[in-house]
Every structure is written in structure tokens, then in C-alpha cells.
Image (cartoon, rainbow, N blue to C red; front, side):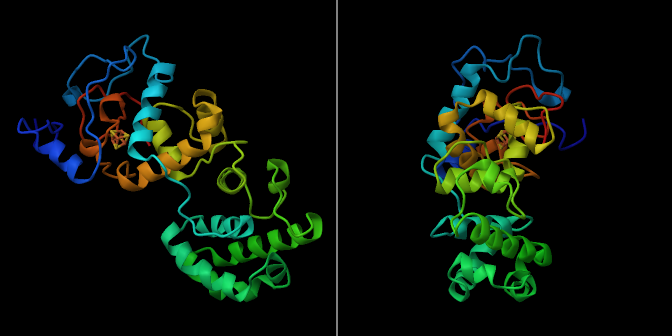
Length: 278
Ligand code: SF4
């Protein structure tokens, strides 16, 4: 077998556990649930179809995933800096195809220059472009932000609406942005945020086979209890930033490792399942 094809095994010395401890992460232990106790077939044979009868969305497996995420990311929330619903809405629009770090560098200055939604409504989109240029797609984002401000001022009395269908009438606002504002600011679980991390990790964890955010949202909402939707999305987003990267996920350090059958895992103690990939 060519070098590099075999998945790395844990060091007998426990060195791999040391890496987790160093990172402050819990160590994955053998699962107790019958739904997660899969035969220990080595992954050297390559990914295979999931065994007959295996249900990745079985309640016991979902509970185990949620329990481990709670241990790993107990109090996580949205990383976008904001002081009110309008600021969160703007930050979320700007975060498309950008990073939260980048957006957090840009927003303090624009909210200093234009403190209220009415200030944004009075702008021409071109006036905002230079301020948000570094977040990318700045022409479209300027139009969306100014358009959303005008609509909020003219149709919603200057207040960001709290309903999904109303939020979706704002320029530049689709379900992801609406769910961020509803969940993070208004604490309303009307849906589930599906960003690039939730998209990728839901597929790796076999919570969905879909590729379209709308269908992924519906699939995950069906298996994760509603009271967990807001936190679950934040936890998965943090997991995507810390360990479950798009390329070279850090499976060796991941507490979900022995219940994750992702085809594109970088290290495994369990079977990898065909199709369970980002
Ligand atoms: S084991 Fe790897 S692929 Fe699976 S959730 Fe963890 S980091 Fe992601």
C-alpha cells in the first residue's frame, strides 16, 4: 500500500489524547449507544455503503452528537459584533463570502459614521462602498444594506421586523441571514442557520444527504429538537472553525470522531460511509 494511504492509528502511548487535552478538548471515548457502536472495520478498505439498518438520524445518535457538542462548545454564540438587531443584520449581510473577523474590523467604523438605520436609509449605495470594500462583493452588499435600511424605515417604522416572512422581504436577506437575526437577537427558533460550516458538517455527520441549504435546513430541523436549533447552529459553526475544516479536518482531535463516518475524514477508528462528505 502506498505511503499515506493508511489512516493513522492512535499512538499506544496516548500521545493523540495529549493533543486533545492540550487543546482543552474532551477525549472521544467508545460509544455506549447501540446506534453508534458500529463494527470496527478498518478504513483501509476505503469508504463503503452504510451497513443495512444503520440510521444516522436515530434519536440516540442525535442525542450523543448534541451531548458532545454541548461539552465542547457550551456557551457559544454569534461571533459578529453587534449592539442591536440592525447592526447584526448589516454584519450578517457583510459576512457573505467574507469572515467574521474581517466584518468585525469594518462594522465599528460604519456604525460610528452612520449610527442609525435612518442614516443608512439616507445614503446612496455608492457612498457606502468604500467603507465595506474589504468584505468583498461591496457593490451588491452596499445595495443590499441601503435597500434594507430604506425598506425598514418606510415599511416597518424603522424597526427590524421579527418575523421570517417580513425579514425575507428585505433586499439581500435570505433565510440564512433571517435565521441569524431571529435566533441570535430575537431568540426565535423559526428556522436553522445553514452557512458553509453547517452545510458541510451536516453532510459529514449524515444528518442530510442534500446539497441545497433550504433542504439541509429542513432535514436538520426534523432531527434536532427545536429548542436546540439556535445553539446547535452556533456549535456547528464553531466546530467548523476549530476542527472540522473544509480541507484536512482535525479528526484526530475531534470528540465526535467515533460517531462520525465522513468519507473525507483524515483519521478514523470507524467505517467511512460513501456519500457522507462535504
Ligand atoms: S471526525 Fe473529522 S470529519 Fe467528523 S466531525 Fe470530527 S473533524 Fe469533522
